[in-house]
Length: 53
Image (tube, rainbow, N blue to C red; front, side, top):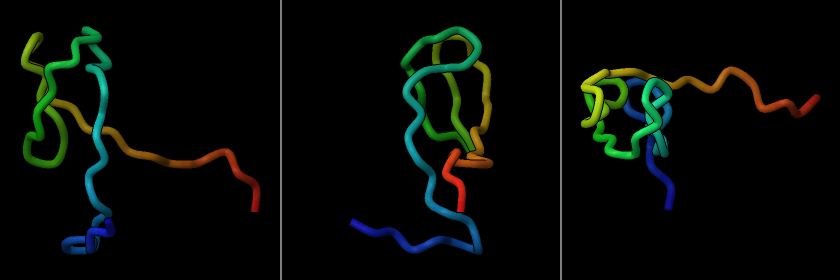
């Protein structure tokens, strides 16, 4: 399954837990994620993979 990028952005990948409280009750929110437990909204961005080219 391949999704086309929208407006120059890559597709949003799932996050498995909140980086603030550790809860797993996350829902997509605007350009990131919202935690249902602590009510914080956040985004995650991959900046490198550790693979040398």
